[in-house]
Image 1 (cartoon, rainbow, N blue to C red):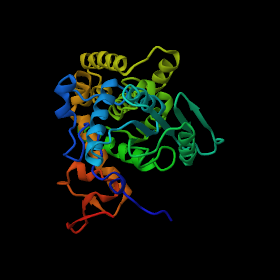
Image 2 (image 1 turned 45 degrees about the horizontal axis):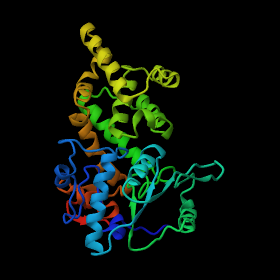
Image 3 (image 1 turned 30 degrees about the vertical axis):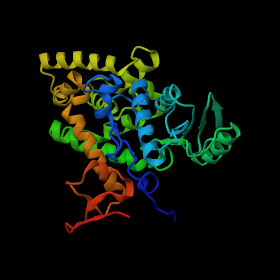
Image 4 (image 1 turned 180 degrees about the vertical axis):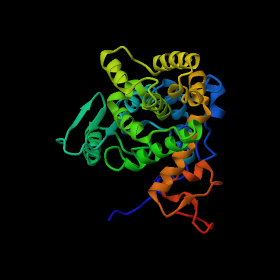
Length: 336
């Protein structure tokens, strides 16, 4: 039996989601910082980009003023679950503050492995966090009021990668299934899609997918519909003929154009969902719909006896176990 807690119990409202807008409205987010930092209008930086670290540091410093006025931040700890994105974020944060990081993922059946390299500890056991604390102290890295911890949410703070991330993956697949069925008129083949998703979600493919669920969703849909057959996709990745998501989009765009010209029925079914992604990946309504559904299905799978209240705000919905929900009889409550 495990004791349940919440992200809110530890962090309060000092939580920042993908839009880089803190839940605590006293802390400025991207919308207020964009002009001052000279960032491109209408675009949200990705985690591995230097601009992301710049915004996060501004948010952290503002939160520190609320926590301890007159005691500015001096150093950071970072906890994450993917080598590519999280290590990139750690390196970028170091341009602002001394930063030590931990990247974890449980690997069942593999020998325990913990290693440190350039200020980052990677481990295939989450319990190695205890090793990380000892290592940090041995580095002379103070753990005091002038230290902030940056903790990744998905597959770190909850649904830890390799340990209990099955709920998150299942919710993502369910969200994709429902979106695809809506857009493709029931043509979605889950039996074909799921093995592709399970393979491409692995960290080994992060250089291609960028560990971006929007990209991964689109790639898996195109592969499962044979716009870019999966066997060919794996062969092209292994041979280096396919190196980026942008290249993948170009190839799919060309093939879908050919399918439209020849009236290919099987490939033509994908045009509705792919056209928006090809033209404006960040604004495609089908992918945005998948993200909304994923948030909801994560909640439902973590507590199956409840369903999400459609009026719940994102800042409240994603407080892990304190999400506002509606019970089956329609009454609203909170999960505790």
